[in-house]
Image (cartoon, rainbow, N blue to C red):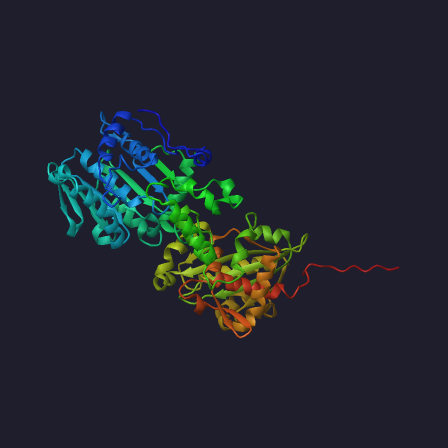
Length: 553
């Protein structure tokens, strides 16, 4: 077996200097054979209908060479079986997908084999099928060799009866697929589907019995914080690329800015967009790109983030809307990676607790705020609980909640009532440290939670009802100011980033409101819990353990 690696630990320098981030083929002869076919395929929707060989950037040839050049003709085995391609919008992703799968169809030796392009929606499926259809339709030789059935989005090789099908993903269409080669288009959209993991597992199940098989994932960056199966694949691809995971069967091709540029904010500059747009000057028009950049910049933060996610692969950490809470603008810089519940208890002289939610279609949110005994900075940590009933009522949020569970920021409880018990356990633990001042709860939601806390020996006087609605405006403004002044820090928790991004502001007279009703189906319970804790900390409580000594003169 030959030795090869798909890791690219120096990718940052390569990206900066325009060098390839794709390894050379394991078998150059096979790569050349595939390239000869690929380069003859026509890009019909491009002016003049050029071939790939006439109108492609070098990175595309490198990708085709790496994939098809990993096939061992002696053993019939392909050594690179998974490819992950993260590429900005308008970099010929759909056309490239069609070209790769048509090349696989024409190279295939297996009788009645199946190749499949799977898209998350019918529209995306059509976009993927049309370039492949046109490659056949506008080439006399291919038209004689292949039959196109547009109504079922299928191309059939007349000699081998091998098919290339383009499918919109659902459980009915994907079930039972035994493809030799599968291409998953727009993986970021699959990341928003709760059952995407099962769907894709079913889709690539044919690889188990086909050693020459492969699966290719193509995607742009998500317009929201990555979630679900997309988040999983993206992280795995980065780890393989960086050499953290050794998996030579997995090829990561990720066009994103180097870490040092991101830290300095240089990834947001127009002049650095070319670095991650390898098809600039081919399918990507520089004049158009720069004009859209300026338009997005002038429109506002939310529009600019969306543009940069799609056209520069900038990962969205916090989804910002035009009606967002102003504190969201200062949230991300105030992240402290060292903060945990234990660390806050160790560093604090006094702690306040906020609790919110707990309905059957709600999360139960807990936030604590500690005041540092050395710096007097405010330090926060949060957690949320939910019952499976939330998944039924909030299906659009399931993928995100499952991610938060893996992060350790969310707990899915088996029985209703287990959530309040676990909250009470944490409150009791804080109480036993003798650091706790008060617990702030929405008066309308006290119910069984009050009983659970009191049973732990905590005095009922320590539980305070925090008025909601416009009366919470003071706590909201205090949180904003503390974030902007860089004296409020929070733990690194994607759950809270999500809640903060979900918060929408409703102006009412001179007051501002952040309500669950305004946020719609998106959850903000943990953020509301934080406001409750902030309300109490803003009263400047004395440290419970503080002792006053008397001196006689």
